[in-house]
Image 1 (tube, rainbow, N blue to C red):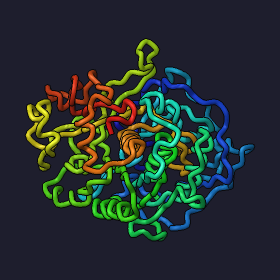
Image 2: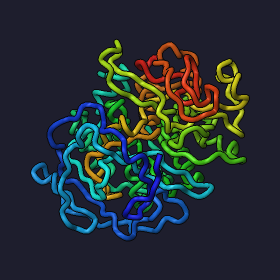
Image 3: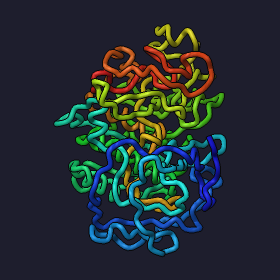
Length: 458
């Protein structure tokens, strides 16, 4: 695996520039892009997509490009103001590059886990059509209920910094796939700062991509759910966990966290933010392979690992899943095991402490999902393809919502209903020599108990 900074010098990494093109079906046609807003990535953009302490302050009123209509949606403007030609979907087998939305951060800060996949060698990439997995794909792959499922549930997304176009980008995604509108006006969508106000933090391109990804995945899986976006002032754990508190105070029944930091000796003192029986709380397990991150390590959250999801007509399910090699997993150095793990011999035989993950969903950037994002970051905007366990966390959060929410600790539920999960038994994310990094029947670290087979396991 090759890791290098982008040519533009902005935060994020290019990872694995010889990845195959997305195997899933591409939708034809142009998105309905009414009054699309553009936020340019000028020199004020931080050189760290992670938004840590070195992040450069940006204006709270960033410059915007011209609005785009259906007729002009292909003519996205670049950061310099020149016109960038819309790119066709990459041909099968074309070289791809991966770019982390968020760069490495200092101690006390977290990094988002979104990974962009785009054609290699294109410093400016604008795609007018979705080419990743779409809501129907996810519904079929995981046999998820539709109709009225999720009604009355509110999924909160916790991220750092501001995405000024969050609601308008969400509208484009939902319109493209025929999902009901979810807006501030109809009461479905709400966006607040970490203190519950509308005094939003400064924008950040990497976290804006993460926000778009999270909102779109909730929409894809639980079209009837209400959504709250809580934007933390910075990517510090202190601010992010204050945003978790605000999400709970606003009545969220499910909270998704698509970020993580290296474990640290005082992490258990932060666990109280997640100790909320009756609210399902998910956290992505990481995107750097074998190893444990916080808050996924907290015994009070559902740690979500990642898979590679491909169509397979020979399988009765129609799909196949293996471990995504980049997913996080392992044995916590500091967190005690919850009782539902302490009673599982597959776990206690390899880990005396809290083990991650609990469950999993698609996360491989090579089998990524369609996301609409208009924030021009890394020269990419429009219909993008993302992977990382940032995809998996909001998917699993939304499946909890489809199941009607929880009355206890969410992580305990799959352990009592593992027969309602697809057991992932092949692949690995490291060389630990045990199920902590290798798939196996039953529980394993990279995929936990498995992926959703309907909502019965949640």
